[in-house]
Length: 133
Image (cartoon, rainbow, N blue to C red; front, top):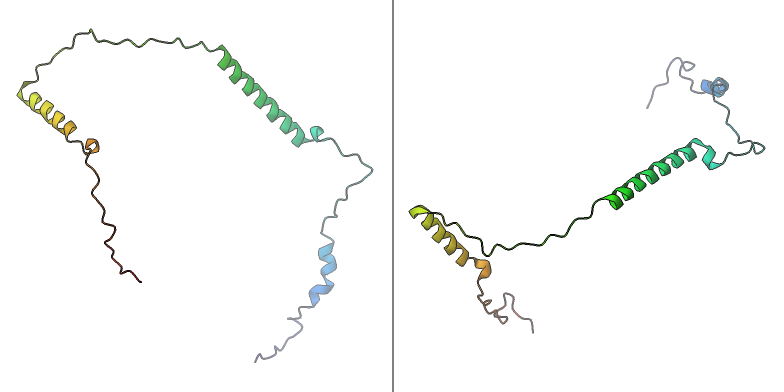
C-alpha cells in the first residue's frame, strides 16, 4: 500500500513528546482567588459605577421630561364656528367647467360602494364532486 520511506527518523512524530516541556514553560500560571482577600462591593467596581451613572442620567432625563410636561401651557378649548351665514362666491365655470361639474356628480352617483343591490342567491345543491352515498 504505502512504501516505507528511507529516512524514518526525519518523519518520527514522537519527538514532540520530549519537547513538550518547552511548550509548557510558556503557559501563564492560573490566577487563584485568594479567599483571605475581601471581595469589593458591587458599587465599588467599575461595572457598579457605570450602572450608577446610567441610573442617574435616566433619573435626570425623567425629571426634565416630567417638568416640561407639567409646565407646558394648557391648550385653550376652541369653539368651532360655523359659517352658515357666509356668502358663497359662485364662479363662472363656463361650458367646460359645467361639463366637469356634471361628470363629478355622475361619478358620485355611480359609486359601486353605495349601491344597495342584494347578493345573488346561492345554489347549494350544485356540487362539483358527486356525493358518495
